[in-house]
Each structure stands twice: as structure tokens, then as C-alpha cells.
Image 1 (cartoon, rainbow, N blue to C red):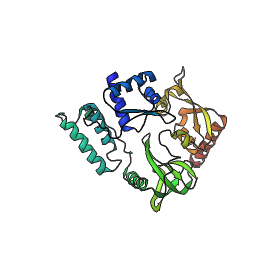
Image 2 (cartoon, helix red, strand yellow; image 1 turned 60 degrees about the vertical axis):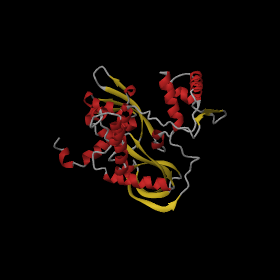
Image 3 (cartoon, helix red, strand yellow; image 1 turned 30 degrees about the horizontal axis):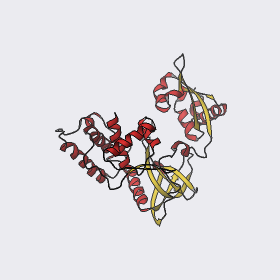
Image 4 (cartoon, helix red, strand yellow; image 1 turned 90 degrees about the horizontal axis):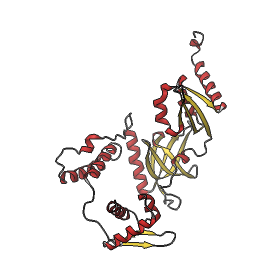
Length: 320
């Protein structure tokens, strides 16, 4: 275990500018004292690890130091192939195809002797939407170009409430979150960083104007996507009672700790969600398999929406 941890620390230091003892201890679930001993072992082995003190302190390896030997195992290479195949038709096809060929060649050169790796034959990752993903891929390619060249983008955007606006944005990065692509950038209309769902972006244009990245305000690692998506949206605490027939959908949607199975097989769910139109459409999709217990206002609004649906079919009201 220590040897594996030492190698992993070296690989982390090669891929990161600087990392603290606390972060390393949390990463490998050992004490900071153990990390100190590990660093001493690495230095004794001739690996030039430098220690820095202060607020920005931590460990780093000299920039000139490189590991020439291939340290990826066959299983790790096979996992990379599976991941690359998953994004093959989502990102730049030529770029990913070339990378996939190179990694596959590493597997072949390692003496696999198989047309496809065992892992690749046992697992598949498909990130493509059920409908055609060609339009989404074009948007991704345009946004990648804009991000690389620091160019403004302009597009029509429809938010969760169905409101349409024309936005100008300083794009920072695109993120695949929960099988959905999002654009994260600084919105010049709202004067703050925002998240935009790619499927709601239409008429995307790359503008000739450029911008200077707001590095002091931007960082991708600590982003709380859930809180940003719910920004400026009223939240309600829901108590829902689902019929057993909806178990699969309920378990797909909610974490196990939010689901309480009742003696009669029904499922009680307590959760906090934004009070938006999509919530009522989603609840109505369950038909009679869900009942809103709390809050009363949400149940009343759901009832009114159901009545509005009934009014669309006046010829059938008297029949039943």
C-alpha cells in the first residue's frame, strides 16, 4: 500500500503545480505525519520534492523532472479506451479518433494480443442524447473555439421558466454534468457568472470582440453547480407520497436517504426543490401515483393546473 501511495503522490505532483500535506492526507486517507514520512522517502529515493511554507505552501517537484517510463497499467489503458469511445461522437471526432488510436496502440504494444481490450468488451459509455446530437456537437465545437480564443459569444437562451432572452457571454468552460452539457461563463446581461444548458442555447454566434479572462473571479474546482442553478429561485420543502408503481422513477430521481418506505409499500419523499413550472409538469407526469402532502400551496397549485388541463377537453367532461 505504501509503494502504491508513493507512486500516486509522485504522479499527483507531476500533474499539479503545488499540493499541501493536508490535501494529500485527505486524498489518501492517512495522517499528515504519514505524508511527511512519504515525502522523506521520495526525497531519499532521489525524487526532487521541494517543500514551501506559508499560506500557499505545499510540495512540488522541480519543473525539469520527468518520468520517462510508462507507468500506466493495462487496466488503466483499457479504462481510458472505454472513456474515449464514450465521448467519441460528442466532442471533436477527428481529435478523439486520433487519441483513441494512440491509446489503442499502447495496449497493442503492451502485448494484449486482442482486437479489443477485455474492459472495452465488458463496458460501454454512451454520452450521446437519444435524439441526434449533431447540433449539440456543433455548439460544443463553436464554444471550444470561443474559449480558446477568448471571444465573446451571443445566443438566444430559454430559461427554466420559458423566458427567452438574447445573451452575450464570456465563455469560460463547458461541463458535462449528469449527462447534460452546460456552458459556464460571465453573462454581460446579468453581470455575473452563470450556467447555461446547451440544449437551450439557440442561434449561437462567435463575435469578433475578445475579452480578458476574469481569472481572479473564476475557478472551476469549487463550483457548486446545484446552488448556481437554483440562484434567484424560490425553494420549497416538499413532502411527497408516491404509490409503489412509481418506485423505479422515484429511486432514479432521489437519493436513498430521502426515501422512506411506508408499511403499505408507498414511498414518502422529503426534499427541497426550486418552485418552478417544470416541477408541476414533472409531478403531473405521475398522474394519480403521487400526492403532495406539504406544502398546501403547492398541492393547491397542482390541483389548479390539473383543472386547467381538464378545461382543454370540454367535450369529455360531461362524459365522465
